[in-house]
Image (cartoon, rainbow, N blue to C red; front, side, top):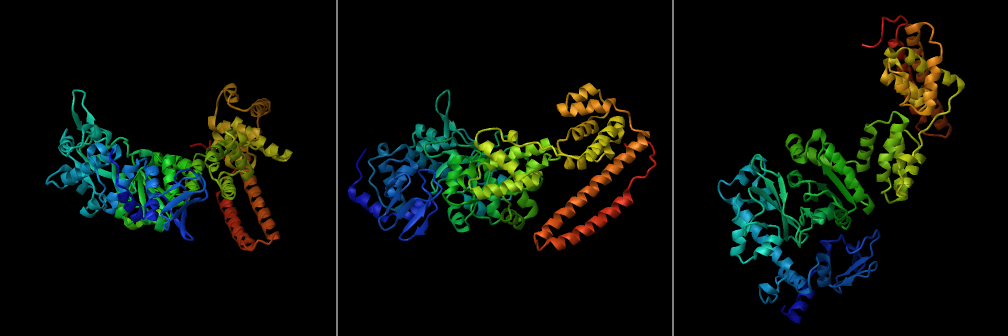
Length: 592
């Protein structure tokens, strides 16, 4: 390889803006005469990476990396010294001597092949009557949007691109390394993308490093196809939307992340800047580190279906360890951003993104929606959320989220914190959540026994049984467990029923089975259940009043106003109770 003259190297080094170059990869902030940011070469939470514009150099005091702009580019993009000098020279308009194609590195040749392919795809989209243009028109993509994202079209031809690359002096091996063509078993090469709208994937310096292709014909599979990884294209760290998103991310101190190319196009059409899309993969730890170097706030905008909800939780797993504040905008009714824009308009989409709640709130709602009525369900919900909370780095923030989960699930914060600690030790978080058994008085136990007794004798009364109140009053109590199972199963063989109960509940079931039945038959049992419901209602009201009294005793300024409101609610609830109280005469079974 020929040697680049020293004076050319010196001119490149002197003219390059090192702050601007490194700023494409790292969010830099002024710090005296220097600029400071998170080091891109090792994981750190506190910035120790300094850039000096005066000396045209950088230094990390965490991993000891240091050097000039050329050194930085060599390390960040895995380039040789001549490759780095030539790339910077090309950007600065400085001619760097080139001894011929053999001297140039693989990365340079792959990048050149991608540039030729992009020009060819753009030209093909402008050709009259091509199906790519018709497809984009059907999707409402106008000429300005096509130009903004440099969208192109890969003709439905086996050798359209392969032939053009060959004619322009790109060896077949280089085109294959770029992922633009594939080798035939019979010899020769064919185009990998055919009959597809193309999206150029660029790096932070604007160079095309890969392509995404969307099928335009009905039945064409797969619907989306990306070029494979190459010396310059690594999917786990690449984003569609670079480098245009860098300045808005810096200015807004926020990045919006979506899953697809057309999702990002929809955001741009709605006037939402600073958006990035993954390239056919889920968010990875490499993506997270790329984002963390540029912002501490990320808004996820994924599809509103079940898969989208799961994707939010997976994204939290990689973003939270990087101390990123993650928000999530939930699209309703299974819509994707493109559908939402078409149905609700640009303003509604902007509002959805700007008001996105914390993504952990979405995860909490998802866990609670599966049920928290029984003690076991509470333990399940905490067990599902604890691994995510264990990734929240700050002790204060983690403790606040533990309290939030405890409130949503209906348990104590110390139990949530125990599950978090178990998860961090590599243990099962769910096993660390105790299933509480409330201590009840002898009088209350008689009432619970009456509940179970009535359901054992009269399964048809299960819809009148105050099971929710009993679960809230004495979660985990064996008699409540028996009552819930009886209401769910109805008339069944006792042995089969007992096999699904805990040992304590099984003992209570057989004790009830040998007791004398309730006197008065079906009518008496129905009246007993109504009385129990009223008892639990009154008990709840008394607990509310005691809580408010304690708040007033502590001097809570809002307690009096809340007490007045609760009193009105209590009076209304009491009136409704008397209005809808069941009659003492039963007309047959209550089940319809």
